[in-house]
Structure formats: C-alpha cells, structure tokens
Image 1 (tube, helix red, strand yellow):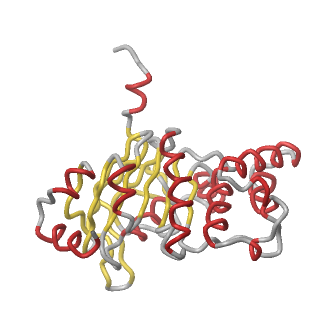
Image 2: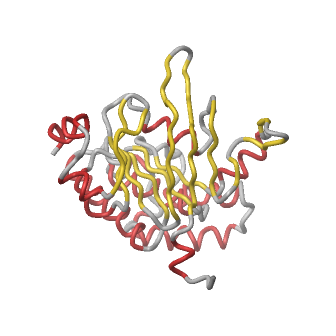
Length: 262
C-alpha cells in the first residue's frame, strides 16, 4: 500500500481501551473506549461529574487508571507491559511521555512572578534544555500566533482572563507536543472573553493539531470538532459526527442534555 499524507492523517494517535478509574468506592470511569486520529479534534461534552476531566488527566498520567490501557502514538502511557502484566514507569519516564502532550486547564496556572515571555520559556529551557535564545525566539513566535506579541513583558496580573488563557496555550505549544488536551478552557472566563480563546483553538485545529477538548461550547463542537462524545455517569453514551449528534441525537440522555445547553 502506498503511504500518502491522507493515510498518515487517519492513523490513530490516541487509543483508549477499557479504561476504569476509581476514587475509593466511587467508580468514575466505567470502561471507556475511544480512538482519536492524528489531526482530529475530539470534543467531549456531558454534565459535571461525568468523568470528562478525569479522562483527560488519565491520558496525561496526572491520574492513574485502575484497569485498561491508554496509548499515545503506540506508546503505553504510564506503564510498561511484560508478560501480560503492567508495571509502573518511573517518574522520569512519565515526565518524558508528558513532553509530547500539552494540557490547558480551566485555570491558567501561570507563574505570577514571571513575565508572559518568561512563563513560556520556562519549560523549554528547564525541561528540554533549549538554549535561551532559541526558547525566547520561539516564545515570541507563539505570542504573535495567539495575538499577544505586545504583551511579552507584562505579568499575568496585568492581563485579562482571556489573555492569560491564550498565554497558557502558547506555553503548552512551546513544548511542541503531538497532542493537546483542553479541560474546559473557557469555563473560568467572562462571556465576552470566550471568543478570543476559541479563535486560537480553531486556528490550532486548522493547522492540523490533534486535540481533545472538554467543553460546554456546543457551537465550537459543531464548527470545529471532527468527533463529538457525550459522557454521563462515567460511560460513553453517544459518539459520532458532531453536527449529526447535535441535530439528531439518538440517545434520550443526550437529547435531554442538549436541550438544556443549546
């Protein structure tokens, strides 16, 4: 078979197989199966407590799983497998895996005592050991990409919430990840600031970045998403083309949820 650009684009970048997660007796994820292909934007929606954010944290090994497997680019996340048994990776090995996965949280988590430019340069210089001149040049490019080139020497407290979130996106991109995870990136923003963050995310999607996005922004899911997954009670209730599901959900629980958010 001839390998073409289209073939590569369709290859699975993330595979989630039978993932379970407990917090004590609370069964948060109940056998999640999901595939995200390279270059896709996969959107997760659902009520609070449905397991969406927990799933993202498991992909990035910020949470351990109790059963199942998560692969990113055919690499088993958080474990090595030997003779059918899983063994925990070391903290150093897990940190190496995380370098390929960028994550943007609800809260911006910027270093308040560092400038915008310093925030973006921190991980490339400290983790990847990039020369400061290279990291600085790349950080300025990313600030221009998210529309904040003039704010390089500002401190986070001098920025709006939307601007801080755009800095957080630039900071994640500075590590040149293969996969970007967004955990309700607009939920902490005033309504008038949501659009500027979604515009950056849309540009990322158009550039071919693989993204998994937890959001309540149904318009973003319809316009930008390649797949839409509705979760409730720790299970996938319905998954497929966003426009089809939003217009004509097949499951009663999906219809009930969408009727409250549209």
